[in-house]
Amino acid sequence: GGQEARPRRRRVPEDAGDLHDFMARQRAGTGATPPGGAEAAVEPGKRFYLETYGCQMNEADSQVVDSVLRKGGYERVSDAKD
Figure 1 (cartoon, rainbow, N blue to C red):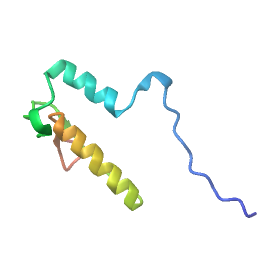
Figure 2: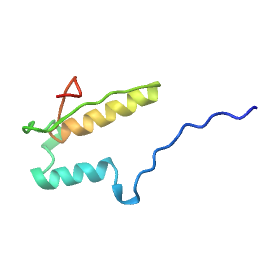
Figure 3: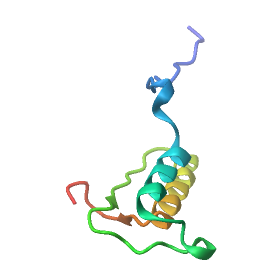
Figure 4: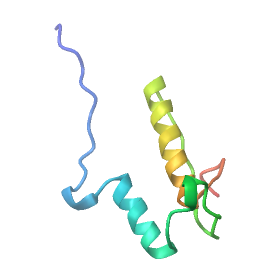
């Protein structure tokens, strides 16, 4: 006994990139980032669903992801089916 259970980590491919890479690819296809960091106009089909579990840090991380995606022109939806 005495050992803490470690959370299982998902393996991410080395060439997967990160959120910044994703947003750069999106901007390349849709134009420049809006001036002043304002939310971009939402384009049809650019929606995301975000569900957060766990601690306050996960909540904070979800808020960051939400903000970045909205600035990239995505609309948040309340149901995964949308």
